[in-house]
Length: 399
Image 1: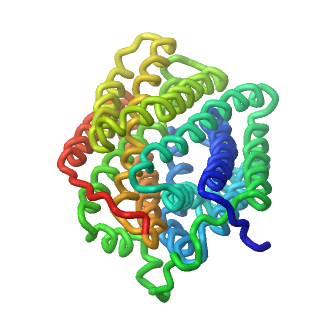
Image 2: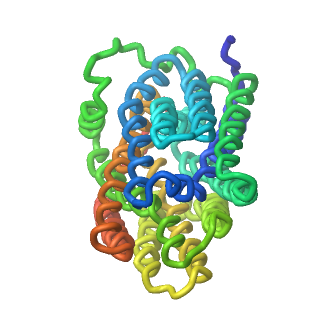
Image 3: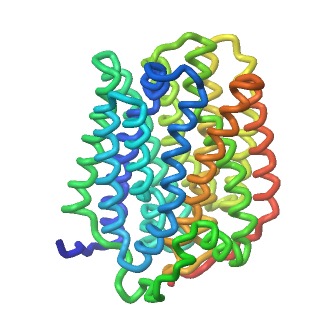
């Protein structure tokens, strides 16, 4: 099918709707994964291993998908990614054995480059000074999907633990069909990379080192790596922690993710939009990192699940402030023909820490204590804030 062309505003609307449908599908699984895994294995580390396998596959695929999107356009990469996710979710719903669950996440991981390509897409259609705002709109779509997905998951889990997985597959399939007919291409041929493929570009570490040589990106990627390590390690075990400490069920854990989604949606749609023009991306990101560093250690002292919810909201607001502004600083540090690779490195770091975080935090959770997971996360986010505080990000033109 010939790529659709459109104005930047229309393209942005289309990709945000596609992102919303895709995120809503992925969040359907979050509240029920610990309960499905419990049928095969009782260790918290097994939940982390499932996340780690997905992340390892995404990490290996990220640089290649980023290069493809720079060379062939964002649209085909987005469509392939979302279709792969649909297949993975359907396979997860079929289940029947632990290896089937792992295979489903492996398939989804290899094709799951839609977030980085979406970031590159938004950067394509947005002037540098407006990127933080439009990344925040992406965060609104993310937060709305993050809110609606767990709500649906909580209801469907009462029917069957597999039902949310099939619903997630349906959401991703809907996103694919929507994008197939309505998603326009954002990167015109004259702005695409025409450099020949090199074997080194298949190696995610080589791409990270190469992009890290650009001004300020080494520090920026270092800060993001530390932040993602904390968040991916922590979020892999929040549902396990609340299940074990407060004896909550899937519907209650769904409400936790629902609160996170609402606050992220409102925070990115309202506060980032208003604060960034006044304070700049760097200061807003530091405010967000500070909120998270303060909130997560407090999870260990609350006496009831009801008090976990306001802490989750507090930390979600911090995440809402830091994520789009950090993404904007990355996008503003490279030219248009490098947006895919830069976003690919950011996604690769997220995927790498999605491997390391669940493994490391799982060992801490099982061998030390669940409380140590939250304290270590707070300390790591403090360290990320120190690195980001030393950044000086130049503003690049959209060429």
